[in-house]
Length: 261
Image (cartoon, rainbow, N blue to C red):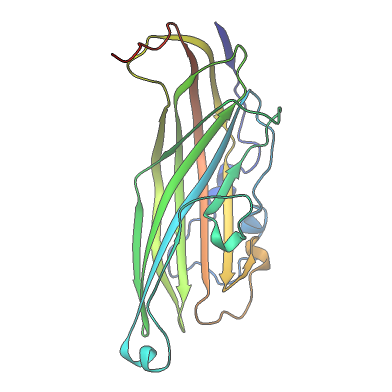
């Protein structure tokens, strides 16, 4: 059995920089220009992993807007926007929020697995609209196996903080999460067949910081570039992940499948 082991520090974002993304609702600025925040780039770090397994983390979103009577009379209508499935060919506004992504050493992969974690829910109510926000964390792993394998089991654990607001004359908080532990569990193996382990990788995953400000189909990803004058309907979100670890084992079936009777 080949055993892959790698461990490295959080090179992308220092803990203090990631924690700077977490602010109380009254102090989260509409324009983040302080030195600690500008040091944490919101760009997704397309970085190579140290081992054969690559990791992607994204956040599925459901935004449910319910307008009051005056807003309804002014022409606003209730909407539910769902962004649950990532597709490379989608426009950014049709995809979930990709907060972390590693680029593969090898372009091809023969095993993939994905898992959701518990939904994070929040709600904000302003003069004109009530907004319910659901955030569904999701992680994918992909690996090129050698020797070729049939299935994968494992976990990714990460500590996450997040803050999200929308603007309706004033900034209204929607979701606040601080130091929540997420555990994504993967298992693509057939439980009815005996397994033989073919490889194992245990390592740290780099810390990450994601920032986004949206206005309809416009977006600003680095907080020090966010618009200085908010407009009604603007949305901003920050997500920080720390202390992430991955433990993945690949398997092949040690006997052929049992023929159906």
